[in-house]
View 1: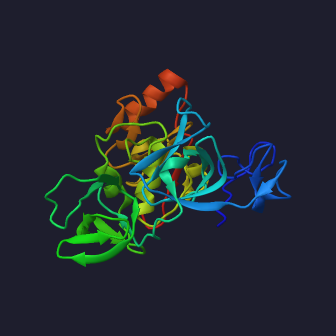
View 2: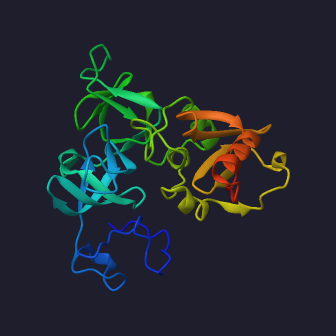
Length: 296
């Protein structure tokens, strides 16, 4: 499995955020493209926990870069001292995940969680304490359906209407993003424990069947088409994805801007004008790009 190479770094090499290479080791498919002491084949694993942080270093105290959700693939190129180094199967993002949460025997998923959050119960009535709480875009393998509940091949039951088979989407990504309102902000989060600004964009677009990279600068170069930044922000269309350096959110209508805000530490709707003023005052930054998704 070879996830996409989203971009190049300033030296013309593949972006290390989306391509697994270090000085000492790299993925075999990058041989001839990057410098490394050795090139190895990846081993596909799946996350068997509700969620797990993808870290920038093999250290629980390091910066969290992203988040892996239940059932998502992780291609491992090195497993050392309890940490797996590799890349996320859904977007190719590179980082470190604790090895204990990754499994080679989890069944291949058939459905994705379409609710903001859904519980895994030991029975098909939802009467007993749940064993897991899964967030949107987690992946599960449905073995059979009994009444209102779906039995998972990995064990447990979920409310069937909270699940969608692969291929079924939720086209209104703005409505999906709005479901996350008031969810805590978490740097590197994708909804498992919290979510950040680019995670909100990635998950809501994924539910609509649109895959995009992890970080906001990568997204600004990959999502939809460029729209000139208007002098009058009221000329933006609902659903336009508005980028600042290091930040991103969705324009709703009537000046409203939905985003995962570190200022409020949650997903909130603000006046876009107020956000622009705050970004200028605090960081000397303003809107640098607007992207529009086809059909929006």
